[in-house]
Amino acid sequence: MKRRTPPDSPLLFDTVPLVPDFKLELKARKAGHWPVAGADEAGRGPLAGPVVAAAVILDPKRIPEGLNDSKQLSAQRREELFVQILATATVSIASSSSTRIDETDIRKASLDAMRRAICSLAVPASYVLTDGLDVPPGLDCPGQAVVKGDARSVSIAAASIVAKVTRDRMMARAHNVFPDYGFAAHVGYGTAQHRAGIEKHGPCSLHRMSFRPLRKGEDGPEMDELISE
Image (cartoon, rainbow, N blue to C red; front, side, top):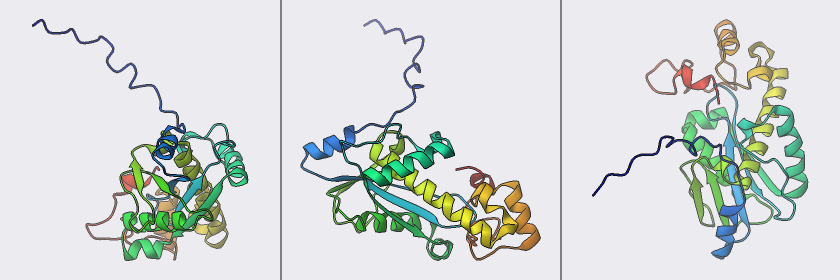
């Protein structure tokens, strides 16, 4: 049997960026699950501040235009969509503090914040779509973890925007209390400015002491992992 000639541009369609849509939500609805919530978190990587999770149930007739992974949007566009989401959807927000992160670990703290956000929705979700690899334990409904979910589901994208904007606002307010670290500029990530502030002033109560370089042992994320989202 003659071997097929491989295509000369095999990665052509792999490079097309994902655009979130409502297909996963409609699939769940067809299976008898409604309403469907999307859930995501912001702030797994920073050296300081909470991890914030959001759960969002979109109104299919009032989905804001331009929903996407929060990291693909400008700060101004995130703020605009944040207002639209809160005006048209059912939204819940929860967070885990740096203390909670240090007592458990960032994965457990993130999943717990996501669980609490989902369980606090004013309208109980019948099904949940979560970004990443895990569905939070302890939910009252089934769910599906979606890799790159914020680029595939508009509900998860909406949750990513709400979580990101909420956390950024929290860190901007934290800057007023702890101005020596520049939280308003880097929202807790391990930038050169932030590291310099820690070296000069030492850590504050918002810092995650289980993260390197704040923790001097072998455990915890590397500094290079903390510089960007």
